[in-house]
Length: 603
Ligand code: BG6
Image 1 (tube, helix red, strand yellow):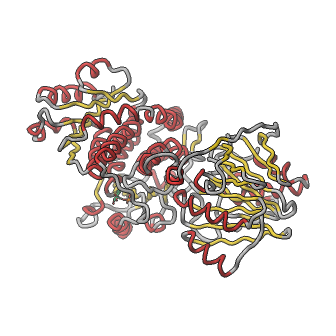
Image 2: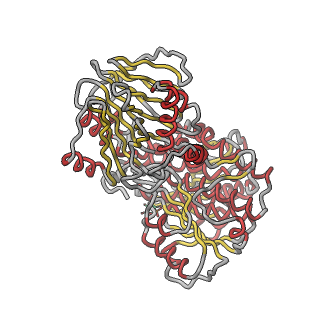
Image 3: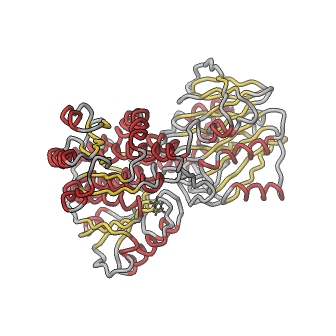
């Protein structure tokens, strides 16, 4: 996730672009850059780190001009560095991009064959080269963009300038957000409303496959294929604060609702549907090396540890290799039995958690192979591990981990397919089925998010409880732990997560008519066992909130309330069930007034 801004009009472009980028820093903040065209010359300034570094650079090396583009980056391909920062120029074409180009390696190979050289490690540089290639063929900037965009697979929102057509700005969108602001003889482009809200409230929302050409004070909308379009502006009356959170009340809610997009980004460019396999560029181990693995350790902290527990179920079920899950702060201080036949998987959103990093170092010192699952590109764990699967969730600003968690689950699912295919426990047909499950997740998540209103009502009913119990079994037991952690973390209500079958060995004594018990009871092989655990809770007067499969009449009859999720593969249930857990904790925290925000101390 990155932020892009474009401007063309009668004012100096740079301050407008910088102000926009500042409002988009929530989308990324590891490097930034601008390009302004003046007297037919493109002036580019880029710097690593937060936007303030770009401000400083521009103070010493200013750029002037009334047409320009800018970018704030959250790295996906290529570490955060000045060289990888946008804009990227090839020949006379300059591009800023938000999204992921799935076929960039294939295009890069072709362009390299044509004698082109690449300066960065990004997928975006491919876009500027391919447009420049087409520009050389056609001599027409607009046509070159159209031809080039039709060769891209994946997601993009792009702003493009051309030194040889210096009065023209082109913007286009496929899969990544883009809004156009209409001013008095001026136009604005941005990834999101807050970036341009101080300049105009008349906005046009771009749809996938659409493009706009700004030239000679006019904006002409069309499809990328060239069909003319009539686009109607909408008046936006949000307050600036509302706009910053995308109209949501809190960043946490925004991030919960962003999860279908986050999962799309995690899997983008990685699925090989035909082959029933996945492509994980960052996993450097060959099939032969993976086949030597006799045991896996997954090591992590907090929410990432809960993801690790789900990973154990996935890998053991589909790859039949023993998996141990360890809390990093425990692992590093004991004497783990690991060797060069051990594969360690380190999970960390930030890639900076000291205990997880120390566990990685410990494992390396003992000769274990390793792979990291991280969100933050080029973080310490990502750098020091031998391979990494980035989750591409985008910066996490809400106080509690939400999208980071479910993208970790998706990354573990990707790894399971890759590993199982490598060692032969997953054949092509099974691989294809598993890949198709991943493709289904975003739409299923959209369905689950529709439960938001119902979950808010449930939160109102139970917000005054002093304690909560969360129960689940099998692959959903870690989600009970995660549900309890979310509630504790943001609402300050004491909550315990337990394997449902373990309840009778102690916690059952706590259950009475004041105790809400959230039970994850989807229709799977454990269904009857969990349903009978639910009966035990009911018998003691516990207030059952059952997270069950859609239309489960039996559970409806027995539970105090049900939250019903779509019925799908058992492997996907943890991802789907996580969402009601997040929403319940969120609404209770809002109602109690305990929700904070970690902006400013972003990890
Ligand atoms: C905690 C966070 O401090 O660190 C959790 O509150 C997180 O949300 C945990 O899961 C581990 O962090 P990371 O970055 O290693 O996943």
